[in-house]
Length: 318
Image (cartoon, rainbow, N blue to C red; front, side, top):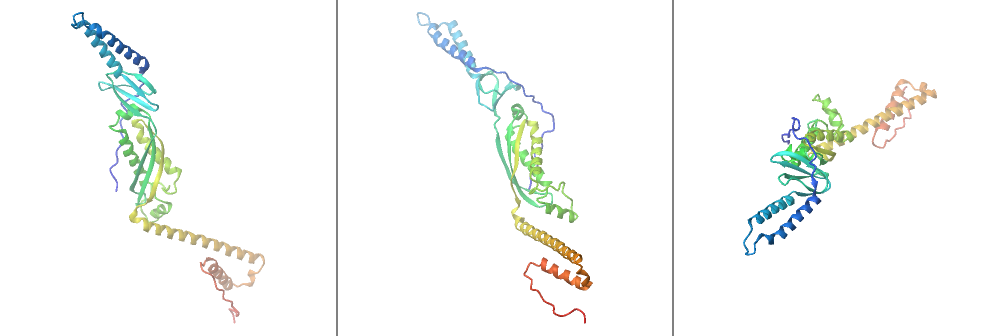
């Protein structure tokens, strides 16, 4: 019913994000176009009057062509909320975050990383809650890459990492909370291990969301991912126990309602006796008649059917 959790890295980060300070791409584009124009202009001068190639001119043309190609290869376009992570022969060089046209070392390996908001739907997952009942739970996580260098270099795939750790955090959160407060109370009354917290998944509200959000943020911090929001999107008992749990909840609701009715009836009887004492009518009733009156009042108030009164025309004493 559950899979082995993906453990978050425990060591310190080995990547420190730094600005790349790329060169203005428009200036380098102009230089590249100028080199191409110079190359085209020098081609006719590469031959003598007899039509033979001049080695020196063609060496110059080759050098111009290489520089023009290198200039074009270093050009890169960045959109808003997009970063460029550069490596030079396996070593981290820096990250460019500014949108626009830029030029970087053509020997750098360049990888673009989106820093836009992304939504992950996790689940529904089948998890045992704190009381041991199987529940189906799902969540929606809104996240974004905050540190592009860490996200790219600390893990093999930061998208897979986010998905795995979100599911792990959701499973852990669900396993330490009962589905509802009734389950928590019954687990304690039956002598079982009490849950780690009495905040229920169904009625926890903001407390449950805050717990889930903090758990996911802790797991995402080592790879430079920021979690903006996390919400429970699905919560229900698993199909194999859903019917039994619904009947159990209905029975609990009936018991609670009857308890409230009895409490109200006792309060009404107390008020009736108090009124009789104030009007000095209680002295006319002996203890047996008073007990009979209390019993009849409770039957009338607590009963869930219409009462048919019985009028006593005699006396209890000869």
